[in-house]
Length: 478
Length: 141
Image 1 (cartoon, rainbow over the protein chains, first blue to last red):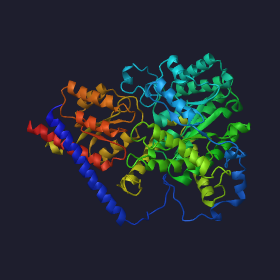
Image 2 (cartoon, chains in turn orange, yellow):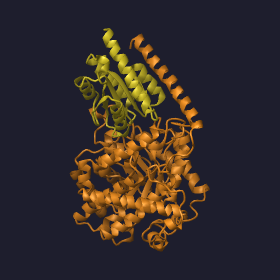
Image 3 (spheres, rainbow over the protein chains, first blue to last red):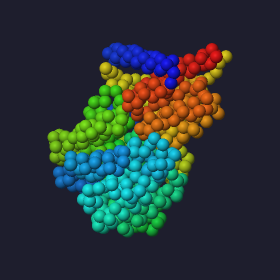
Image 4 (cartoon, each protein chain N blue to C red):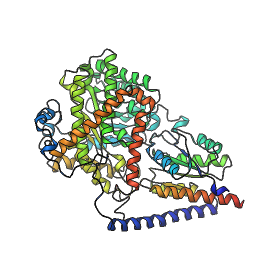
């Protein structure tokens, strides 16, 4: 590189610093001058919120049926009678980096910190079905997760960990059947029978087209592969969850809360329909379906979303698919705090965001939780940040007292009205998807992708105009 | 006159990373700012990106990487530009890039690396300014 271009690069970077400093100054001045009141009061998903909620906002005669008791239909208040009084949520931190040996060390570290289950992050070549030495894998090997090319890699990944003792969540979609085959082979080698292994495959290909984009084959044959795994697990690995129906990525891609809820449920119902078409009894596989939601920053909206999710799932599994087993009707879910809400500016603030988001998931009755590390917008998490993230959950569990009673916000005028509202919005989306010919057709026609892009651009515009404040980014800047 | 011609930008996602929320927001913003924007879609190699940039006769290439592969992929794109004798296309980008990597990439010839939270107005300003500078260099020659 020539000396001249180095100078230019320097000049460019100096230019950035001074212009940023200027805009920071301006927005700090703005913040002290502007009125604190926005024109309208809306959730992060643009749902308008009233000044006050009263008994008039809640149909009290219907309330009893709409809520039920915890552990009873329609499960609005939670899927277990005693919730966290009898069993705390699983603290499940997603981890994986570099090679199998490094990730194995992180797992031993997390297990020593009393994490409840393992969660494997694979690198992009593994997720896309490429070997580490493939040309498309250039620069990506071991970057976003662990690189697994062979069964030998997989054996290193779980060295010193008995598959009989852990539950393992594997975030793998397109090549899910291959990685699961490795897990089964390892179990066999360890002398653990397949009916003893516990864990979850993400194996949710539909949300790949909708949001995350890590698909290999077209939608219809891909859904067939997903259904194959469901069928296999029903017959051979009955404690395994063959699909984690995932809204997390849909939300991260910019959807609203109602879209996250509706599109996720719609995906799950599509798999359910396919498995029934395969000749499986709904009550044979539905108890093994689990869901995965995002915990974003709008505290009450998120709690309402989880509550609405359980109620809708119950109703549709019962009425549309004729599920009878209680376990088929209960929506179980994992939650991860919102990576997209974290900021590179003043990253310590991310600890606070994550704590509040994690609390909403707990108040919403999650079965397991991943809390993000504060430094994820900057790089892969450091050990210290990963530990703070886990400790955040432990503080919620041990110190706040929120686990003492079930669904502590149930019956709040606001929470019940908001739960109804999100349910109604999500139901409208489900109807729209049906009218458009079902989930796969909507994927093929780009319907979900368009709806999400629209919501994401609305949010971005609110942020750019300053109508929506992100602390440390467009206001409260140091 | 060259300055009245619309700025043309190629936006690209190299590598296997499928996170395209950011690049779509940038595509819409640059378009709304009056530029001609071409988006390559996902999973491009450095070679296909540079070939597309040459064929489309763009003024700049904007690359988005959230997978951590930036220290390999940005230099690979710079290499491809060099190999093809291209000196009039500005390379910039954004993603989850630690500060020390950002500085190293900017030293190596990436005109600017934006990180999360970068105001869109700054990105638009940057493209306008750097492309203008680029064209005036061309005129001098």
